[in-house]
Length: 417
Image 1: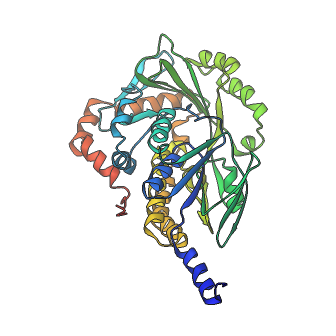
Image 2 (image 1 turned 60 degrees about the vertical axis):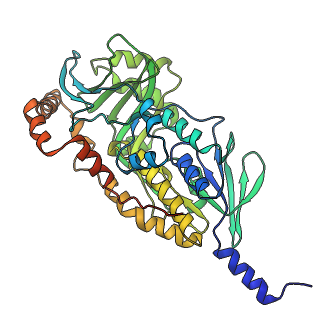
Image 3 (image 1 turned 30 degrees about the vertical axis):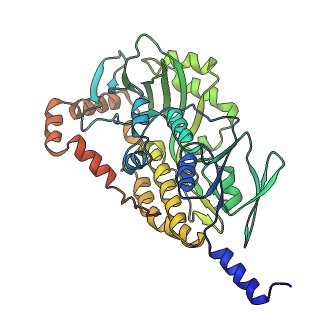
């Protein structure tokens, strides 16, 4: 006997109101595995698809700060993160002769090096290991099509397969192609006038456990940082007008880097040689992603794909982890995904907007045009690093107070699931 129309309607209503079970996450960097961990913990059937053939373990030093510290603790991963410390003991601001003009140690309450300093790849690996026992990871594949209806989402993959899920989440970075499938061109990339190149280079005789920041004239900065692999993480950063940046193609990257680093002084010749031979250079413009909405039906955005704050904010990792934690918690504590997505955005958007609101003059203030400007900037750093200023700051700021203040910058919900 066939089901009555009333029962059919009730069944459809029930299926739309019950908590979705099958969730597909695109991206296995930081936001994706964090989201996979919490959704799996809450009983969802989670699949993570990653375009690369394996985890992408490259990248520079990042820090786990603010409310992300608490999330790491809740995941039971704090000791693993500490054990993977980069070995960096602080940051020195050096001149062209490698003399330290200013130094901020890791233990300094006003220091720039964070307590939980870790390589991006090491954090990715830790998050993957914590989530892979319950979440299903698929590498060397990616989403090519999305079709949603009242009962779910049809997903087409590059491998030629198709599959259905209850929800699909884009966590695949600032240049996400999945995002475009979800919400088209609504999100915008706000270029900040800064370009950065990142690469790993052999450790040299001048490298120590200090990060070394060198400011050159013509709006250029070189940063060399220690890692725990026996190599050095290097970055070369320079200001570039938006009209020039907009014209760049991938073929322009190496020639541009070699041109911009000429006559920069300090260890510029060392990086110039690497620009000729290094096959693992990441180059991109620095900017923020701003999206008017983070969901569309059964599709949602998180991490850099939704609200990249730019590396200069120092909060990219924090936002990625906090966003994933909140999204998972809202999905687990709401009976339907519509309310969950709405609550996720309502809770998180004010924090995202506060993080994306950079201080006046960032990044231009630390990229002087003239040699005199470099001199003035280094002297300013020297004053900030002086014993007198450090003692004065120490009267008001303790390391523990700083941690408590960081964690309090966002009221991290406790989800009782």
